[in-house]
Image 1 (cartoon, one colour):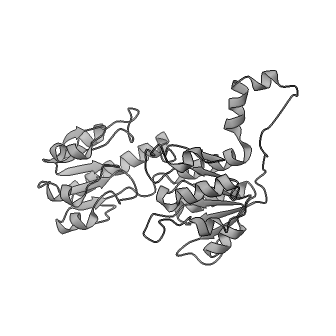
Image 2 (cartoon, helix red, strand yellow):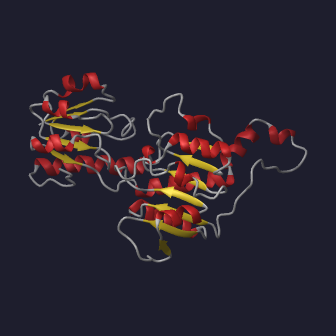
Image 3 (tube, one colour):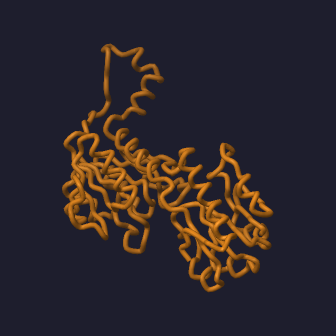
Length: 316
């Protein structure tokens, strides 16, 4: 079959191989595809792999040969699944490939919020330690995690992995989940308001749905302790960014660490880019080589399974 990869660069900037995919058919791989180029590039495609290039209804209806869409990610919001279903086009994703990597990044952001390692390293490289009168210094409070309360919103695979790592630091773990309501090991499940009011750190690990869009808003931020931190390695639109910037700038929140924003790349006027005590990383939590290798392997196996008549990881 004719296979087209619309935007392969972020998955494979050159340290992985597409050879296994190329062995399954005639394969054309594009690093990036602008919306205006999508139909011309994919017009003869029977199989499309996409990461962030959107396949809207008008695209799906304009690709007559299309039989299969493979999303090289877990979330499938970039595909009009209903339009695909109407045309009997299979849609598959890759679940759970980045659990450990995202959990690791969450803890890295937590440690930067509380230990400020990157900041202090930069001051040393700027020669401040060379000029310092004392043998050590620190600019911000250094916070020990032992005994602090971590509140996890969304207790799926990633939330559970973050909870296990936090417990190893001696943190007490609260969680809020649509499904789990009883205690699970050392984790206590509570309602959302209790979690926000009680936690020293809140970490978001829930999917983006109409119900969770704007989950962190002005009212709920007022429930946080002024000494609390917010971490988001899930989806940018979970957070009202202006409300968060206002809380940070007014001292209503001690700090935030975000790996995701509502628009990616962000617009220059995003209020969080200049907000106080706000760490932002460029949506890299998923991108360890190990996680990307798993992602590519499963995405290719999904195609192989589809071609063999035994499709897997279907969402439609």
